[in-house]
Image (tube, rainbow over all chains, first blue to last red; front, side, top):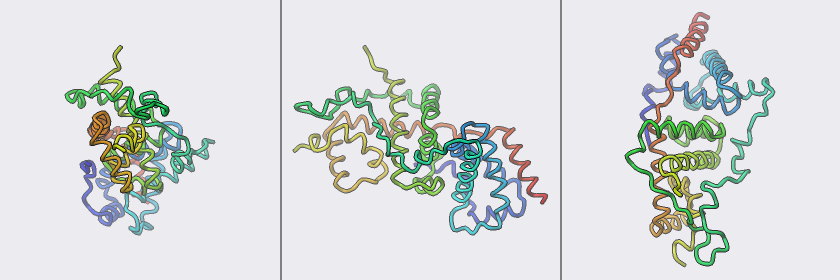
Length: 216
Length: 82
């Protein structure tokens, strides 16, 4: 697990005090640190990147206006992201978009396999039902961090449903803890893991397809 | 019943995230560990999930554009002057 991107080591009270004192350097630091995550989360609810950027702007304005009411009962990050989610939901309703609550609240409702069922022996197999018939192909270690491989992973994440893309981005790209993601999105630990599981499974498959394509 | 009979590979791949997140019940944890120890193919799968997490973790986090940062700073200075 990485915490490298969480560069803010001042505690929340100090951050809030700096913002209240109109310190634009602190504001810039928070904006740089959270912007990518905020856009991802906004895009769970709103249909385009452009609208997500407007939602982020509106969120910051609401955050600043509500700063005097921040009591520190949650972390500043959780508080900001809860405001973001509410702002995004409101905006989505105004856009006439059906807000995909179920993609966050009930992601397990529609079953989804981590691996194509055709890669396993059938249930009625006499000896090894449910065991690999087309096992995972080894990934060449030396290519894992190549720029082309990273581009494949970025495309795979971009192709995910927005709720899965958000969870894998927050957890694995930005290095948030499971608890932080659950708090920010107001979802249960189980649902957080379902979304993460599906996202990682698809990224793994994209890596395998690219680095170790099926032969023949 | 052997470890790979008690839990199939197809079942194991669905438990991998809970395994990595330390969220498995003791029974499933035992079955998963025994299966992985006995199954080279699922060992490869588990390694690939770790590789996936590593590669994803090495992605750039996404820099904010100068334009977007300027717009947000305008929001801040508008608020600051109130």
